[in-house]
Length: 481
Image 1 (cartoon, rainbow, N blue to C red):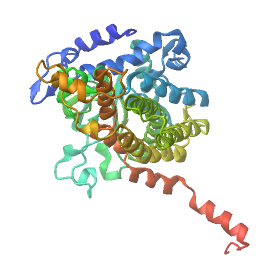
Image 2: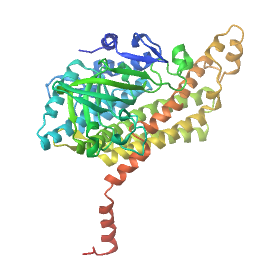
Image 3: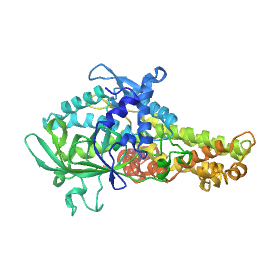
């Protein structure tokens, strides 16, 4: 069982999975500077669970085994579990200032838990029991899971079965007595290179002709036929330098996303949790989306806390902290962060119990939370840029600061208030640059679905017809017979 950071890193060393970075296969992901910060961030989910002060948030009791487990492997059993999840995410964001990558697999297990129960109820299948065994296996080993939902999608005007290339959506290529063979790919896979298992799921609602694409299953990341291609990030070369120019050198930027190719991957039936039940694909996507959008006020609220602190320090370091407009903008940043956190707490507090017995957040409020994130985080970043100044875009290299020839000039002319070392000011400004750069903001926009996806759910869950009835009642308009 993985308990410590060292256990986690050693478990990754043993995988020998196929990972490519800049066109070359990586022999050991734990030793490659492009992956180390992401591994460090994920390792915090293990380290914090061992601290008595955080035990209540970071651990839970398994309803399957009765054992104490890491909360990232838990199936929510109450509203309290949903709220603790959000509080946990904010805590870890404080510790890492980055994405720690275990949320997606966490949400995948919870969404599949309820949906498999309902598939079995209708079709007499045994998916739910299979999933419970898989979850117990994850809990026992404390493995990290990739929630693999997003397909490349190809021509967006066409459905999965209409594509010129059938592999643009993951699908069942062949069924055999021992299991199924799947082909396709999953894109933007957060934490894939430093996880242990993938939970493959449909990416959208499906039609009867898309039956082969209605596949949900568990695949080890080192299964034959799995190839991971690591994605490029903003300023990613700075991770290779491992210095202060990286901004957050220990924990990186976002989640280390990868394109995961599935080339005739065999999956035994005991690891298959949906196979052809197209009518449940949309429900699975909706439940997963609600669970994942619930997170964003927690993790982004925590990141906003760090950014508010960094921006306030930047004002201290340059002598502007007492200006009224600076204090007003910091207050606005706090407001924006607490607003998205409030949304996550609200959708958790208004959660509901599924037929399977697990709990899920309120769908409409979860989508509202994520939609607010797509706006608020951009405004928080804008205000941080405003207060920190244009210097975050023009700082010299760390090598210049350390240069025997020009270091004295960098030291002299980038000085702020007299009692703060120039290096400290540069380190802080690099952190702000890192947290408000391109990749970080794009993830806030498109992670867990684009704003348009949330608006679709508003119209689906907003109960407009009921709202019309409320208006008619107050306006004394009688219902037509």
